Image (cartoon, rainbow, N blue to C red; front, side, top):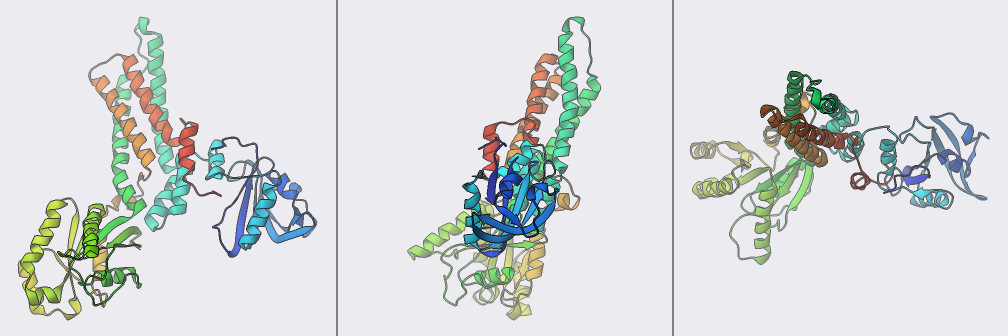
Length: 466
């Protein structure tokens, strides 16, 4: 991971492949100079003389050869994404043209940017803190309204400001405690103990709240996995198609068609749900299908919500309600913490007598017609009940990053040691160690405490060009 910022880096900033236009980004102290060496304006203007945030039309030239007609945008330091001079070349979206322009600059005073290096430079140049930089990657990968909302809030610095404020207050007390240690022989007290106790308790409450929010954040960021299980040929694939509103799964009249798991994701109420259609859970001697059944239980293990789908017509005609109860009980006993929803299919052709019979013997029934789509909206609303969206609606800070979660846990552990020290009236020098520990872990989140290895790990997960 390069942390030097005195060279000029280049990368494709738009997705690779053919398109209407592509954007190639350069950043570095000499980015404007390097770009001007291979750019001829259509109106005889000099790129080096342009004001920041202006655009010129012209051609990219390789010697006597014109590579493409382009628009070149100029952003001068410090008013750019990276805090350096930045040039963005909007060229035609042919992969050949993209590569020709990039290779031209690689031969002339540029090197290929590492993954996330533009954002790394923005962090190193003080344009954003580490938490905000990580939110850039989350924003790029956000696939639903909720994850987008959280990433935007974090990129604007909501989470960072909360952590920085707590850290600054704690740092103030830490310095007063250190001062007390310097005057230990005089037995003076600079730090107001009652204010210090109040602050430590407040920090503990805030940290616990942020740590608890990770459960919701993780769900929002990664989507809620939902396993659709049931006997073979009860309409699981048809239900998946109805939920996804497209022909995604194979649907046929042959029992046991779905020999593997099928995953797809949709957004319901701004929350991502990953639907897993699994092989039927009947006993079988078919080797291929028995592998599929094993995978079904693996998928139930991974799922947060289990939709148990039953063919209502078959259930009524064969009166296998007792067997159904046993199957549901099996899942509930093995996975007591998983939300299990009983779905009775074929609502469109079920008689009132059948429904009355089911109501007498089964609890919490949900009806659906996978074929006509009746009951699909009610099912979607039911699924939303399993997500705590209160914090999201109230615009509270929600932690979605595992690294932040880990640092918050360590900071809380240090703060709890401080609380213990206060209760036991331990010497200030012992408490000072734990206060420093808490400061360190809070600083890790925003990048006030950092190292090259940490930066390397974070930015390696970015796409090249960002």
